[in-house]
Image (cartoon, rainbow, N blue to C red; front, top):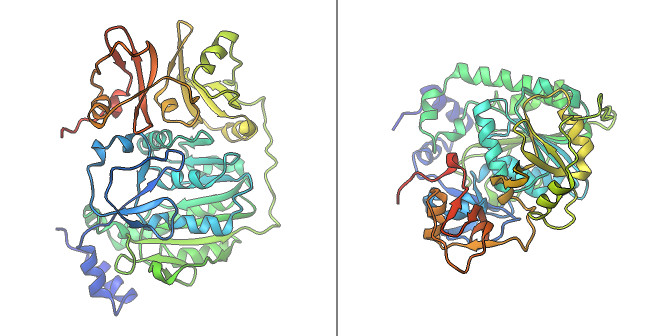
Length: 453
């Protein structure tokens, strides 16, 4: 096991003088396992649930870590495997944001998607979530996890925060889970220990200030900014929080926490220590913009995205076969010629946000037309858009894993031909097309299970 850096130990000795030994022992102990259920995909989970995560709805601890890769419910997006402490952001949102309003939210450093899926589950259907990730490889993972979660009122962008400057005064809620030195990961990611240095802490703190300064300009009057890290040191946490209040014109806000949670209130924010609560190292502080700042006027310089298309009558007929009746969605084609769906009520926001951007992904891909027939996209299968009468095939666990490995499934005479949703415990896994002698498996090749067992 990699040893902890001596300078890090000295730092924690200063922070926790009476609990230092207990803290170090916990870092070398067992890592808690927690998941958060998807509220739009309720089902009984075949997991050993131990207890609820107290500060988050729909989240539980597991008594042991299963092989998630071999659980069809995981691939269906029934839950997200997420570290418990990081779910604490839910309290900041619920206590400072009116969730009955139509909220425009931004998760600025969003990959792999844990906090974005949490925010998506809290906001109502009239709200909009923009999830941004600057690193291209992580952006692709963010898209996959967003599709798996199933909501369509989301835009995913792959830009530096400075590229979003046209959105000044636009967002009611901004989450900055900033890249950090990763001290809170030392228990579950031993490699993170070898990458730590005092110099890296200083570099991270400076980079965080740059990101925060750009992000603060995007807040609407009265908007809420949540700043978080997975680390312990004062430079990235409390000192940066003090800097936000002093230099960015935002007021520090508090929340109510329960003593039983084991979380620690600091001068500006809240700290999770793994020896005090059941979770990893995590820091969060909350800030509010004044009412005197200028709100965005949402000026659209052109006619909007030129890829917004009106479908032909035949295309509409094909589309309606898959969707719930009277689904109020805007349809457009992306750069891959895929039909994509986005809530009609948010069309103007979509056009405003995406003007000037060149790496973004909007809503839910539905599929592509081939010979006037719609080939459905995997994301559509995992969405909440499909009509309740669409044909399904319920699979047992063995069959479901076989489908997720992209293997051929047997066909029976009782099956009707054509597109079917492959399901496990009522959860959509993907598409299969039933023919006379076989079922063509349309599960994406790059997502298939390769693990044996």
